[in-house]
Image (tube, rainbow over all chains, first blue to last red; front, side, top):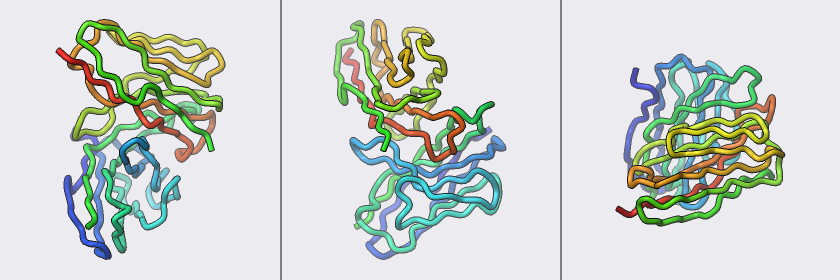
Length: 116
Length: 113
């Protein structure tokens, strides 16, 4: 099993350009997440999905869109990139715990995005 | 807004020393997780604690969940260079949705040979 994979690993964009980050998981997990990680700020949730065809906003959703057309894939889109979106982006997947009290998340290797 | 504060933010110690990292909040969590992240990789789950006062051991790492389930600690005995990395705690509330998992800002640990 590959676990959670992300493409691309690195990308440099100019302000105003668009791009899509792809996340794929082969563990048949229901939940998928997109986070961004910035120095000194830990992981912040951008959007998440609790199942195929459903998405919801997280803590910092502005400037991003997502889609989950297939259970194994979760796409993160930037329609008009801004320098403030320079960050490392992580995708994760999980299954809900028995009481939904905890989600043990499996993370991808990350995408390092720089917006000039 | 619930916050998970980790301390210290940075720690550099000599191989063989002991250390403790803390994760504190004013909120009650039904479970708390610790992850380790190495440079260029995603976080990897180390442990989940769910009961107040719970202690779990993973080789030289000891994790404790506070009695009131507001805080947690990670103690490393005889630190090794392989323990170097970013340690993140993450808290979740009972019956919370997927959006309610809160991550701390992390403790960056460096073990000098």
